[in-house]
Image (cartoon, one colour):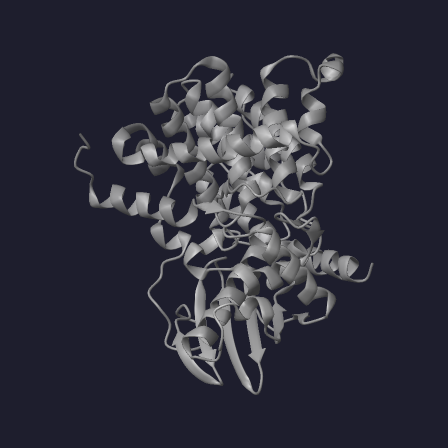
Length: 446
């Protein structure tokens, strides 16, 4: 029987449900597919489609405008089931088989017929991708035009599944921009509005009723299935599979670090190469969800932890990643595996009986180590960064458990853990802005 939750506990669980959810495919192209799917549904609602199968046979044009970060993360990543990369095929699939009610699993109904039709649309150049003039790091505008002169639009901002505006033939149907943006705005809270701290996350993970957080074990179900698929198949760079192979044991060994690295990287291998299995995402990123969970899951599997222990450690990891990510924004020049692996490092410390002070030491060790790893777009090579993050996570956890912590006299580390996290956020969101622009410039000019 579930114990009575406090209002604050309910609020934190609501935040977890908002930021931890299944996602099929890399979430930047999926956001594009979602916006297109919504625009297509508006056309259907307005009676512009004369046949039930019109998506498969009619002529329509798709125009996509995206922010630089969406473009960067959508250029080189595999799109589920297609053997193709990029935003063009993602947009076409959203038009052909997408359902906006599925959210980040918008392409759930993907099949061979819809893939063939989407490829046809791309080949006929019915899909165009352009760079939007916007201050939003995460922005997608999808416009679908059908003959003779009808057009439906859908806009996504700030969150990968946050549709803030829709229109039909220039008439606004929905306008739900956040406060401070154009329009009246909505009361939707962002992560920082929740006022989380590492101390509160630690206490919540330790004390919240287990029945209220059992749902988080779906992270194990989804991400472990991806890892198994990555180890069986030949996806991407085969980072996880290569680490796990017996003939490489003289390099990696038969230890927990190699096990955790191989499982986590294998899940990323499969996902970034277009596997049709969903990942449990964190803060809008499947790779971050994988990195925040798989090292913790690997520890639980190897050392026989109970479901309750695993659930509490996953809550710790997910919430730490969400908390830090709140200071960076959903997309930045800083690789998300830095944040996600910091979460999993805290989960490992918790599983090993670590204290609040050791959790703080673990975070400081991570920030003092791999801050500055850049994001140069979503791609199969992300599995290598994920593996590096796992290695750092375990290193930081072991040092923290031995009472070793980067000093506040070093670099960007402060005595106060929240100030340290804010420093990381400033570097990633403000300090690395020129880096972000330069990376995008290099990528689009290749």
